[in-house]
Image (cartoon, rainbow, N blue to C red; front, side, top):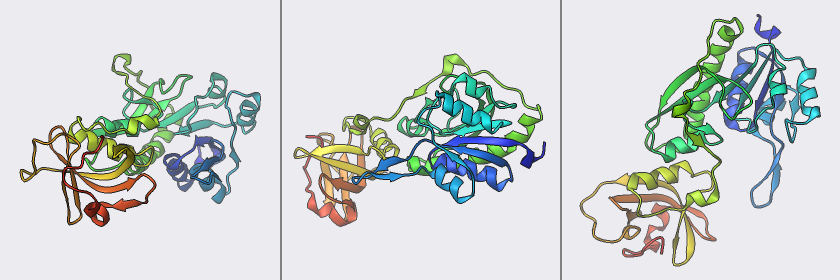
Length: 316
């Protein structure tokens, strides 16, 4: 089938999805409708902000639809009215009911940012970093009515840099996932691809991130704390306390040195000099590179490390 004859409904919300939508558009596919979640208030002033997918779609002349629920008759009728041949989702954020999945001639494909059946759910990228994984990837799956439970079609692996944060890894996965999607569609439509059922014995979940997950336990390993900081940098932020006030850490670096006192309790500052802020963990030392005190601005440690003293203890 000619690309322009294949009518596609695309459903996605954040930048990961916008990257996939851009790939479809650049490749010449006919996206007849772009569906995203509704605009949401952002920041302290709660400014209503459109999702990245909506922004890209509107800038490129695509019709945009933002239902509050996909379970309504209105949503079903809207999707059915454009008579799509194929429905593609990428980080849309809602499960689609079976009657919507049954609309397209060639079914519904999902671009999922993990190597299924690992990390089904809302936050696969964050969990891959939180758990210290060395490898992740993208899976193209045939959607069913469950949460990422459909049969797998194609996948690609991607190594995880030990210092990358969620946003950086998400961007890498979006690029790789877009390429995989573009290479998968023609063979899928032509019936050249077979599906593989997910191994239920190997399923792991990645439920939504919650604010309390950002709390740092200094009794954890250096790697575990470093992974938490980079995984939760964008939201909710990894945090600890000092003198009863909240302190957020945004960027860190694992350091190995024998010059520091390893006998002090975990959470203790062992260096606060010449821009270096280094803290004892359960098994080593972590350099804090960017931080924010409660009520203050986000700062580089090179600009504020002198405000701290050796012997101070975080988490007290």
